[in-house]
Image 1: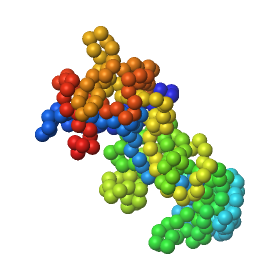
Image 2: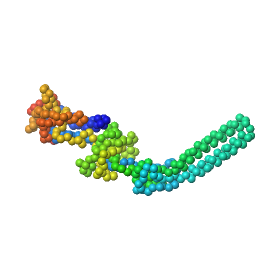
Image 3: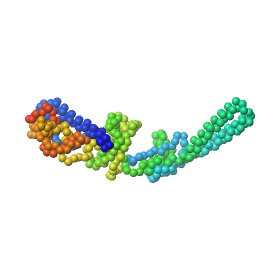
Image 4: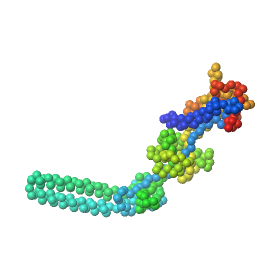
Length: 360
């Protein structure tokens, strides 16, 4: 299961890193006025995991809206804003006067139909009379069904909370400031926070429940929380005002992150969310993408180094490999100040080495 959870985030990381590698190849294959080869420092490549960031906001675990059923009158609201409630706590009550009146009226109708049946039965047993009796019996059944519905309304007159939480707001009219229908009571679940983010329709396929993510403070880069996506909405939000985006106009799909710990987070805090494909597990030493390693005829590994402005082969000693991030450990032969090039067949020792900064 863990392997499957890592698969998509790793692919995202590989695609991102592939962009760097393709850039290297294009720069070198495209040539330059100085006919040199572009090189980049180990420090900039070591453990270089690129993750897209998505804006998010800290919110309570769950918020439930309790709206009035269509056509039903509210008799009383039984809670106030800020009140703690438990699952099963009555929130508001419907008026049952109308339902009680309809039950009484339906019972009178049934009594009337029964009287008519008695009169018809006493007048004879013709086919016409039997047909009228059956029609009246059918009307009695209709009234009985209606009574059962009204009695259900009476029995369920109280709307109760389905979660433990705090009453966030109360609106006795059920009409919002915009004139549209609004919840009578809104309850926010108590407990740890969760983080709500939004992802565009172009990227939603990469998000799935159980996906490991990091939540990063916007103010303190090193303040990080770890968690996983608990759910991804299948329908976009109707209010796409780019609150989370940077001017993008595509539809945005909400997703929610459950955190391992929430210490230091505040309700309403704005944060960054980024997929976890290993960037949080920074290994000691030098770890390079395996594609930077070349092998000579005897199978010994080496890299192309820019030394003194010239390209030169340098033997390296490799250690472990990380199959999840496609990186290999360099035990000897390189330090973070060294510059290396993408290992193309056209490279030769003595070629001019141009650092990325110099070649910009």
